[in-house]
Image 1 (cartoon, rainbow, N blue to C red):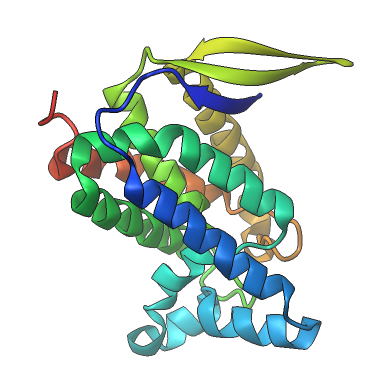
Image 2: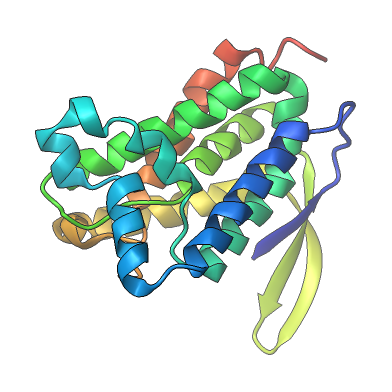
Length: 223
C-alpha cells in the first residue's frame, strides 16, 4: 500500500513541507551529477558513519542532520517525499512553521542515533529522510488517527485506490518495521541504504520520538 492523498484539509500553506521536499530533490540531483568516487566522498562527508560518530562525536554530530537530506536512489527519494507530502502538511499546520522544522530535524537526528546505537562500529554510511518522516507519522497518528488516507493498493495483478484510516495505514508501517528490525538485529552492522538495506531502527526510533515530542511542539494547541 502506498499513500497518495490526505483528505484532512489544512488551514495554512505548508511552506516548510514543500521546502523540505525541494531541498531533498535538489541534493539528490546533485548526487546523480557526481561520479561514483565523488558520490562516495560526498556520503563519507555528509552521511552518518556510525564508526566515525562513535570515535569522534564532537566533529561528526552535524551528520545527524546533513544525512537527512541524502538518498541512495530514486525510489528511496520518491517514497520518502510522497510520505512527507501526504502527512507533513497537517502536522506543520498544527505546530506552526518554525516548531515543525525543529521537530522534523530533531526526530531525524534522534532516529539516526537509534540506528547508530544498533551498529556503533559499522563503517557503512547511514542516510535518508526516513527517520524524520517517521517522526512526522508519529505526530500525525496521535493527532489525526481517523483521518482517511487515499491509498494505492496492489491486489495481485490489480491496482486500485482505497481510503484507509491513518491509524491502520501507519500501524501497518510500524508493525512491518518492528518485525523486520527484530529479525535483523544480528545483521545490524550491514544495514545501509547503499547496500539495499533498510534502517529499521531509525524508523522505529523516529516514530517513537515523534509521538513523544509532538505534544511538546504544540501539536494539540491549534484547533
